[in-house]
Length: 186
Ligand SMILES: [Zn+2]
Image (cartoon, rainbow, N blue to C red; front, side, top):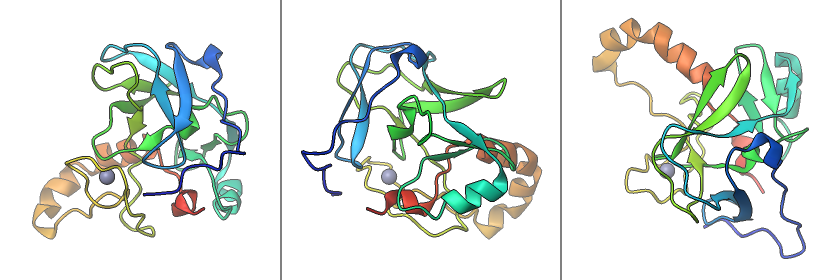
């Protein structure tokens, strides 16, 4: 289990103006800080917008080398860096069976509830790291944990189906949360 943040480290803040439900930051058993529901959240509702500085591909590659980063891949060219002007959504941890998903709407990244969420539950999202970048072990502890934050490579036998679905998959991947392996280093 990853170490909890040091007691001296102040808890990150949530910008409640960007949130539609009461949320709080607490140390997480998954990774460092986590975001928790302070009230019940019904399925299919906007919870919080993921905000940050919009940076291009070159700047993304430069920042991805940092020890801890919060980069959300918006398109193949643009990335949102949640460490600069982030709403707090950047602290939502990865889980292989998450209770949230990201919806890109008119250039905004909206974190939505994938199911009903109870008060006190940690909010989680599937980061969907590519299978061809450095593998990051997953500590989500969910029964359906795939072992890494990275997606599994499509098996060869499914090549034809994968090719048919390629356009859709690429689009979906670009819209998913993708930080780099460096995020997990401490
Ligand atoms: Zn997992």
